[in-house]
Length: 169
Image (tube, rainbow, N blue to C red):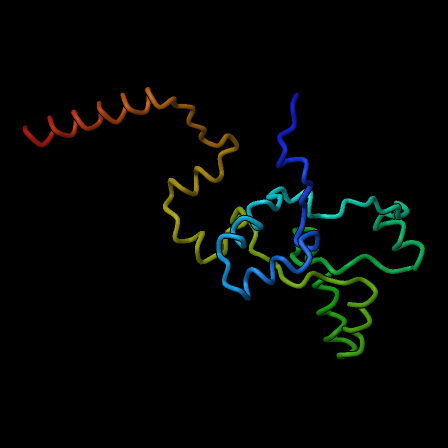
């Protein structure tokens, strides 16, 4: 494989050009500026330093155990997180704000409790779905359409012809 003469220049980034790039801009030499930019490599892998970092492999669990840090507060609660929130509310009613804080810091409850049974959608959006859409969400097997473009074109043509016949009668 023969390497072209321009590829032997190994011009990777603008620091290799020195002040030539700045001088072409300040002197208004558009052709020289365009040539210098064209000679730079567009490959991002050549611009980015790829030095390997030799950091020890610490996992989140190992660091939490080493520094005795509790588990993080969950952002969204699930079905088994409701008793934690209930215990925190009960601690507030029985012992006040300090008891609720203590309960929260020892066993943090979730920040939010999304509605159950809405398949991840907000409750107001889920209730606007039609019954068919709710049944479709509840079914275990999602509808997957494996149509080739030819089959899709045939189905659309057939649908259009049927629609035209229906309007004529």
